[in-house]
Image (cartoon, rainbow, N blue to C red):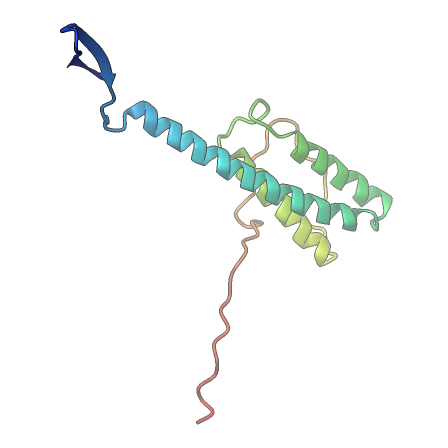
Length: 146
């Protein structure tokens, strides 16, 4: 901000503050990135909640042992937060686990890592060989029927 002097009728000078547009500071950039991270966190939490609800529907139909192991995994995934996790991308890791679990339950084929209870400590990244990725396919019209 800068000060500007303005003359009045009585000859007295009055000082007013004038706003000046400043270039975005590092602080402002941090505020914007923090807001973006907050929005991304909300989206990831919503995705987790959706997947979690789907898993709960399948869980009711499972036998005791499998149900118990998966319940332990779900508790660990639900407890994951900034204080309990070492890695900055813990939401992404949590969502990979719940998506993997959901895909296995849909196929009625429970495999690693959900055959045993989760390890004690923070979530570790899903092993690459087990990672479930959502792929998008585009269907194209077949032009060979000329």
